[in-house]
Image 1 (cartoon, rainbow, N blue to C red):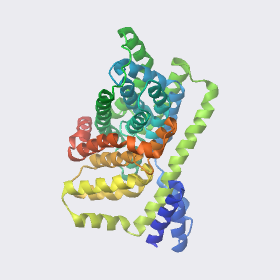
Image 2 (spheres, helix red, strand yellow):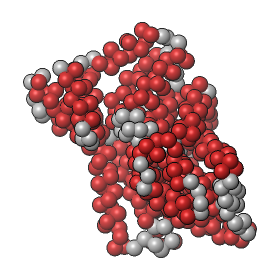
Image 3 (cartoon, rainbow, N blue to C red):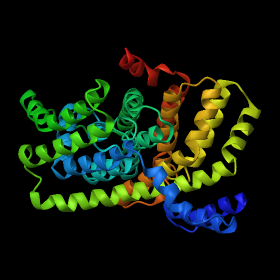
Image 4 (tube, one colour):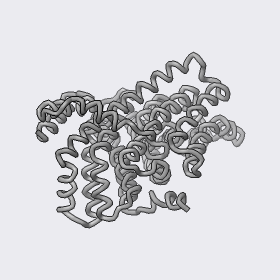
Length: 424
């Protein structure tokens, strides 16, 4: 019956059924065949969703939507252009900087790709940048979103295993910055090679004006990070502090958010949150079935039977997660695989916080790998180019992502330095 579970799940994915429903339907087929009462479905779904920490998800999604609708994206783009626009390929560099700042607000790669891409891709095309490379850069830069705090995948990882979400947020800061700097370095090289244009040089008063415009967005990121690190509030409380902050800034500072817009934003945020929660709920049923069939123990035993060497084990896990990330949505893969792989990793001496960052980074890279790379579809849709062209354009940027993954995997202090500082 285990074979039926996996075959039905893979078949449903192949015919285009959304991941959440593929998990739910394949689980339902298993329960019918095993003659298990269907009351298990709501029980296990509720058990998976009954977590105070998961309240972070709708909170950060709503805060990001409020800030985005309040004009925040344009303010961040203006500041990024003022800071790096005069460098060759400056508009692409500004694209990455914008994604890094926006990452501190949204916590998801898809919203980053959609919000930043809708502004930057047409602008880059207009200024003579190669369209394929521009879309590839936008898709790659958006993956910084789930690494730099706040991060929805890290919230899920912490909820599943009891790891501190605050520590996970802190651990993601340096890897996220490294990814952003790596993309910027590669883009600068590509810009010199292709003789991409420089933007105009901004005067100090203009830079100051742009900074003032984006100050409230930067301050929101700082409030979230410092508040969690300093123990002022929990990640869940931080999410709703961010919501109140987003409302105040959008309504009274930028004044681009209107009261009449708020119901629509709340509904959109609720729909996005419900999609994630439905995925978590169905994935929890799937994971429970796997646990009852002792599949996690079999996976762990198989991997430990290959090697007990920490470095080889991390290589095997990375290869597995990169493969899974190419075919499965990030949150579903975390719910199904993360608890099992965490046990394997810790059994060979890997720090659990470090491994959580490794796992999230692996699966986030999957957002830019075909055939299910959601960020490829978003950026390609904005630029109106095919998946084939996007797949080719993303290759150089995947090299940067994999290099950062290797550093985070084999240099623990990259992710643990700030966590240890936080604990002092």
